[in-house]
Image (cartoon, rainbow, N blue to C red; front, side, top):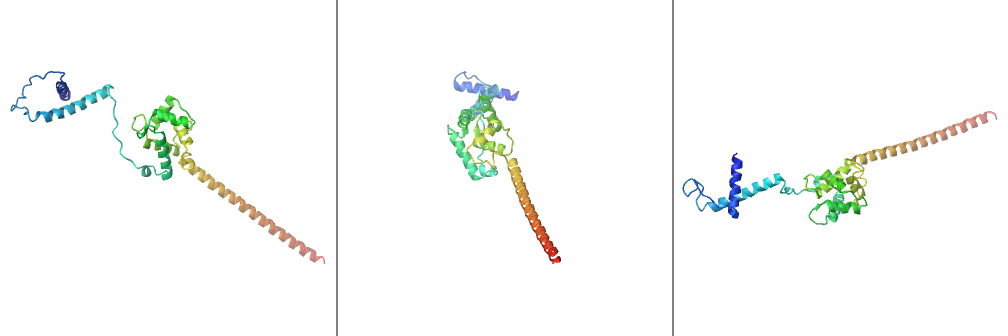
Length: 236
């Protein structure tokens, strides 16, 4: 195939440049005969070397020799993307994230997560920690970015985390004050609000009913007293 031929040529050129192979005569590459001039060779050689290096790296990645590097993430605004949380809550989450980002590289890796869970009083197994990261690891780099850290609390707020999961424990035991808006979950929060309103309305209705009953009893008593007076006066 043409691509294989190109890759072979580029690989050979790299070996020649590194001194691993002696350059040989190539037909059709003499000056002025379908080839490049001496002035063109340095520029094209550099371009070919760069392309060859990229092809070799791609081959190494496919063969499992080299690791794939994730492209840099776009800067995101947590205040606009995570509108379900207040600014104070996000700042508290950021403070907590930085507290456990011991490497100060903008990520919480497996060992840093292990330390976090231990300090929260809920140590996890190695597999448990890996599963915690996997749950929100959108770029598959095996560690938590700040955005992925916020996803933990979003999932907790949406009720998407099993109660026995490590992430649910992390959200519940964190020092972040999201007990009514976040960790209990948006669904649970609104259900609790509805229940509270219903209970309040029922309580008020019971009070009104008691007041109405007392008022009626007072009126009945007043009527009985008036009837007794009338009856008493009839015998005089």
